[in-house]
Length: 311
Image (cartoon, rainbow, N blue to C red; front, top):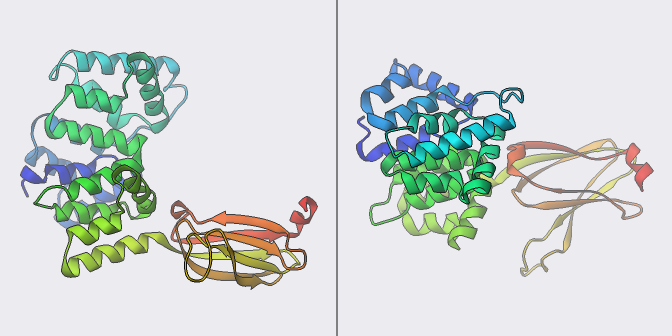
């Protein structure tokens, strides 16, 4: 379809992807449409935005300390500044290459140097000197590299702004960023003082709301296996997060026992903290907070006999 009003959605799909993600996207599109994704971009999107998205399709270069030196960072800071000060239309390709092709380690260094030298971050410089969809694309791509959780939080809020909600953008954001959604939701709470779940409840209706909320809550859930490689039984406790009718926040709730050389399985949620204690001495031997970035299926060794040396 023609990009038109869907340019924001197109940018959210193509900008800020890892090289692996981009290759998977290209293969999936070719399999589905029978043509390459680059051809779609060049045929449907023109101008500076087309140039930028084509650069995004190339992916990020691998980090090489011999190539991405301090001198190279200083060079890119100067190139970025001169391109911005020269006015749009004189050096945008330099900016596109720095944003799209720079590995994270290098881009972080360039951003830090830019802040130290000119007093503003790269994203702020882009917002001041550019406009339109290409500005949004650049800011989004920078954000996905430098502040991914905050950037996704802002994308979700953007999809829900105004009288005409962008349901396709909202759906894409919840689906695509499923793995980091708990972290993005935490940023959304801090930025807008409202949870993503409450936003979905407020801005959507019917079966669509039910589906989005199911995807939302599923992103926090994971299956975890705790293994005991020692010769002593281990008591498993869950830390209560909030006051409720059953107890107070911070209380250790006894949930299970892991026998020697055995394991237990739990279905739990992002942010839950577990404490593991020796059954005979009540000594804490391990503490773990569930992180969604560790995957939907996790396995953790909570105790081995070698740990006795530290007790």
